[in-house]
Image (cartoon, rainbow, N blue to C red; front, side):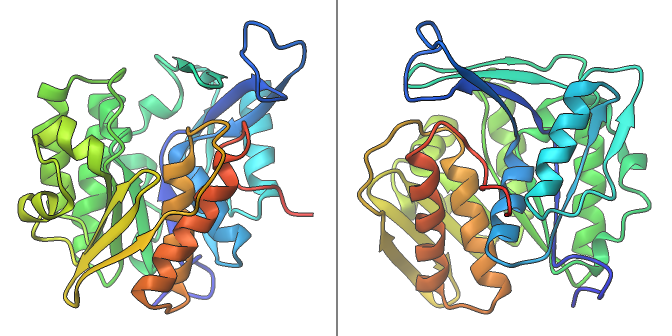
Length: 298
């Protein structure tokens, strides 16, 4: 169980400054843009916090105005940021979202890419209920990969659950490099989120059942299939909940929203269907905007 002083969920990973059009239009034609904070793990923490759960985000930011802004915005979502550090010798990463056309990242050499096992050594991961990671972090640097390994080892030896979103980013590493590492990490986690199309790209497994055969170890395996729905495999067998029909503005961030909604339900003790439905509801909100994080608290 989580300590009173330690949030139920601790998420670890890079967040960046995000530049996106204020409306659903191309970055090329937009006359108005906005600057927000975004990152897979802080997004998850933000959605958990938005649903009333205790959530912390651990990372490193540049000691610059963008880093301060990212920190300020994530904290405003109700996320505990006490374990975020600032690096005066490295920048905060930036990415540009072009609705309907993808994203462009400028994150090489960022403060977060310099994180090592020492960055989490004093953080009481073992006292959380869930520690959440993604497959983005081990691709950032060898130091980050070592940090992820240290987190896996510590959580495995504790009563906490390890949540892992496969989250393959082709711009960070090739399928050939990523596939075996992400498979190994997923099979060592307690809770795993993976897209059906992502699993097909990485491992040549086209169906949810195929993915489960490849990843038999996780206690809870959630295979997301876009606008079709999501299937969870657990000791109770498979359970499917359809997606919510949505007019999509921009898909980036929907997977994080789903994971956040699901984990918030899990922390509340909801059943499988309720957790999956909560994930769909949060993804539905994000799909209708150019943002990919939870709304700031009033």
